[in-house]
Length: 324
Image (tube, rainbow, N blue to C red; front, side, top):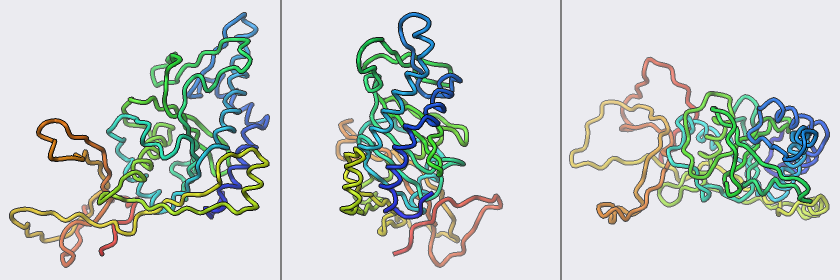
């Protein structure tokens, strides 16, 4: 477990070392043999070759994970921003998975508090079956995607996002693959599907701009000594950590109406998703573009009125925006 964003580049080095150990390799093989893995390999050839599919697949996965950690841009999400992402992800994203939501082609994001019982960090990259191919071409390997209905073979042109979930002890605990164009469904708690909702929601929050901007990002450069250590280890990323926080100018929206409502109290509003038109002048002609945006939790109503809470107990996962 780490407590400072500046520790993340050194943490990355430890993760790259761990993923190539025999202990981690055995865990990858176990998951592949038991059907717990998001991706399942199959080697073509005689039966004795096919029986090595799990071992070969585990080796390819481990090598690819180490490579993308070395290429990954680094993100540290502070406590408030993590709370906002978890609260907003209580309802799954309504848009299909799109590549432009990824803040980087490959990345490693560390949450200041776990987003699940065991998940503190997530690595990701754009992925297709060609990224886990056999170098010498001696055998053909095909990959299948694990789904609730069973495994589905992937065609060579498949593209999506591959995510690996890491515990605070730097152990990769699960993976998931999000196909581009797929829509999100409700997920059970403490599952890879639920963690994927939080990660994708974090990307949405980081991407919102203009008056809807909810995040501010500060770059923390790697020290010169640290950069040299990264280069010796084969890390191509600069080591700059992007600190992601709730934007300081976040405000409660103002309701404008012909007749101002005479509210008698204030009340809490949970985070929710809103389908926003980006060019309302073209809306009637159907030529506008829409984007899903997230409205954070806030207190609604006049500041001089009493705060009313439902008798039902609600857990506040995010602080309401500060008045300004």
